[in-house]
Image (cartoon, rainbow, N blue to C red; front, top):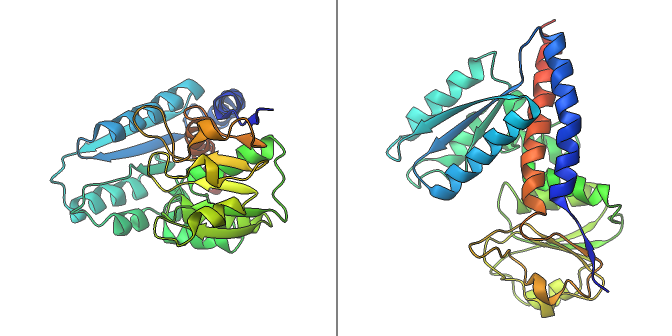
Length: 284
């Protein structure tokens, strides 16, 4: 029997409908001011430009505002930091998104950490990560937080389960591992250099593909009845997992596309609205 499809696209559409109502309430209370997400795009990477456009379109669908800063590939770290600082000080900006990746000559971590934690709606700062790990209030990294909401919506058991996260990026693999740990899973973090990786994946009840390589995780590695979360997306519409080999024997899986991706965007919107609501309360 085929596994349950964890349909992120359908859930995101439902969440957007509720967000539209909350955004309108916010506008009514703030006398027409809309929650605003500021995006920064550095360079001319086509995929990054597409992602930023999708996020702006999503803002428009729910009635939120968005502003876009486009910077040349030659932009320096100091110049980027100046733009971030200006957005930090702007009271009309409620959330800041620095699109990853930036050109290699820029100190991306320094720029991420320059975003004030109150506007870190993409959950990329070390400060926000630390607060999330310790169970304090923080905006979680958008993709991991979206995955957790998807698992919750479909009542996927997490408590006591063995989760193997293949990938250790600071905005996906690491924060998701910590979120699963905080949800009482037992978590093993693996990566492309892990020894005996197939055996570790075989032992998992929840498998997360977040390594950034197309179909790196072979279907034969995954045990029958596992939950498969594929957080990758590559040309040709494939993810990090060989999904075609497991959909008929896993408990549940995220399709590619239409699984994790839509949840990332709707989580970003949800957290931007929450930031706007918090700032509105603080200024009353």
